[in-house]
Length: 116
Image (cartoon, rainbow, N blue to C red):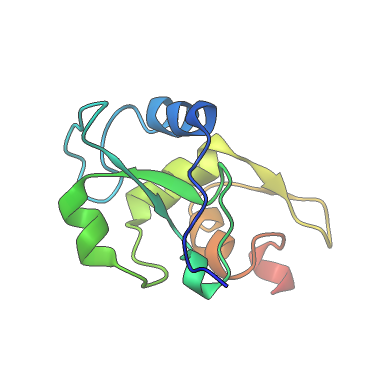
């Protein structure tokens, strides 16, 4: 069995790059279309999926620094992802937004703070 990852589809790469406003979500530096990395917020090695809610634009330096760690996304980056993909709590239906949603999203993506 191979450890090789499947390439990210080009439409998904472009979507994430545009959504993140062509900047690294970790340090905020602008990244060129041919020089950015897609980073899995929750690493594939830890069960992360290759989808638009788990991928972010990263500069090569930040992506290498993060490695296979989980939760290294800055609060600003977490807010950005939560705003781009609002969700509702599966228990009460309250929309996950504001200050708590980005923190909750990483550990409990489908619950509000009251229902952890």
